[in-house]
Amino acid sequence: MRDFWFSCGHHLTDRDVSGGLLVTDEFLKVYLARPELSPPPEACTAEHALHAALLADPRRAVGAAEIAAVSDADARENWQQMIAFRDHLLRHKTLEAAYLDLVRGNLDDTPPLFLDQLVHVILRNALDGCDDPFMLRAAELFFRPQRMTTHQGALIAADDEKIAGTGAAPLSPLVSMLGIPAGAEIDILTDDNAASYWDRGDLFDMALDLTFGRRGLAALGAVLERWMKHLLSLDARIEPLSEMRDVPLTWYVGLDAVGTRIGDALWIGEDLDEKMQSRVVALFRLTFANLQADEVPMADDAVYLFLAMTSDKLLRLKPQNLLTGLPARRLAPVA
Image (cartoon, rainbow, N blue to C red; front, top):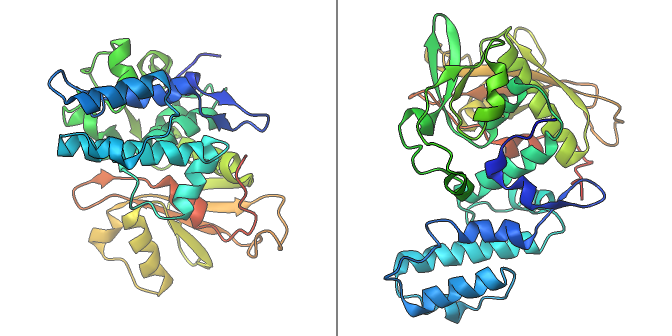
């Protein structure tokens, strides 16, 4: 089986017996390689000393006084955020458990960049053994904002950072370490070029067709299923819908902020105007499998999922919404 998403650092982690990812010193050191934390030559002695000490022992306790001694204000803030995030990871048995604790609590103090990186590596674990490039490309929506466009009647998602030309500053320092080129031509993923994904997965330079009835949307549903199974041990079938007509909206989950607003409007019986309808990227029907009413109070009812883009055609899927918005009582992490 071919490897993928090397830049997420999955190969630097270990697994426990239940399949969850264990934090290693090597995984933590990747954060220290980020440009925000790697001190420039002109940085103060305290910052150089802190960085060197953590490279030697990335789990060592860091006191507030050590960070306060860093002279540069921006550097101090970066260190505060990184140490707080590191300590959060180390308080939990697995990365999956750390992530679930974050999304069930308060995300306000967690930089979105750190959260996206955590989703990236957890998804790599959940999709281990996947041989479908369409699923892997669809999974990129979980941690990379997408710019939506129409092309010859098709709805296409392309990596927002890539098409904006900001790919020269990759999210993962491993990309720079590996010498992966920042610039690349964007191609729409098709059956003809799908095999090239294995060499391009860390470039994020393949667009995905999310038109109803085509492979991209079905692949996204399959990834959502894997996400639920891996993190919540819940089995479900998630299938795309072309539209919703005369269906009982017993429960719904917005997979992004706009999708949530759409679900809220439909829940109270409002009709969507043409402008809001045009923002809908995907509708899904989720049905639970092999669950009892004491586990999911509405196990016999479908849950509808809404995914939508902003007015400027930006798509920001929030994978935590699926984990926290389901009507399930059995919400246990993998470890």
